[in-house]
Length: 169
Image (cartoon, rainbow, N blue to C red):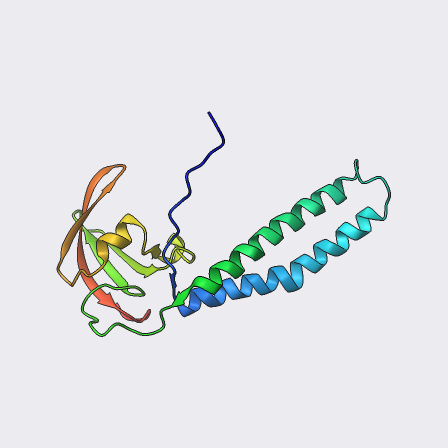
C-alpha cells in the first residue's frame, strides 16, 4: 500500500464575520506571540551546545514547523474566504448563517447554526454547511421535513423555526 492520498475536496469558502475574526485572532497570536516565544526558546536551547541530543532544541524546531504550517494555512485560507455578513432576502428559508430549530421524530429539539467548515463547533451548535445535516437543511422552510442518513440509520427532522439572529428562538 502506497502513501498516495487522493486530494480532498476543499471545503466551501464561506465564513461568518465572527468566524473570520476568530481565524484572524489565531493568526495574529501564532505569528506575533507564540512564534517569537518558541524562536527564543530554540535559540536558547541551541546555545547549550550539542543539538543532536538536545530535547528542547528538537522539540522547539518541531513546534516552529507546526506553527509555520498553520500560519501558511490560515493566510491562504483567509485570502480565499468570502465573508457572508448580510442576511438573505428571503429569511423564511434556511441559508448560510441561519439559526435553525429542529425537532426529531421522537420530539427532541435541537438548535443549530449553519456556518463555514472552518468554524463548526458542535458544543456551540455550529454545523458546517458542507455536512450532511447542513446540506439537507439548505433552502428548507418552517414545517418542512427532511431526512439524513446517519450511522444509526435514517433520521427524520422537522424544521420548527428559522432566524438570522442568535437571540431569537
